[in-house]
Length: 155
Image (cartoon, rainbow, N blue to C red; front, side, top):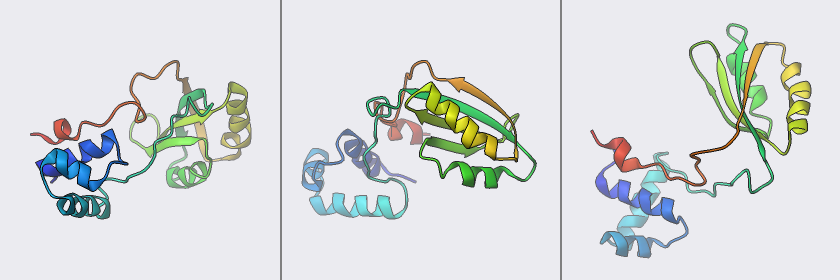
């Protein structure tokens, strides 16, 4: 379980992960060493990863879609392994329900997406059917909004 200090440290890192442990400690009224140790533990325990989050739209990846895939029984993991080799796969998960795999894909253009479907999707024989939703606009994204850890972890 993540305690209050851990939540506040994550919140500070979400605001600016480049700020020093000393600066975070000053803001949270704890020592630099405490912050350093907590961050080291958060990373080691795989609770956070400190990285840059690119904004696909600003990078020219202006065509985004959600694709739902129905695959042959027992083939989901193999299809996922093939798909994650593509740099266009932004997010991919196995799920229950009508579809076995749902992904978010990013492209420069509709024609680039068309090529992906023809060259990648069509080349995976275990895929039975796809349903694609073109993203018209994004209301919440990881590059614009932080995950409110405190609100999510409160009982």
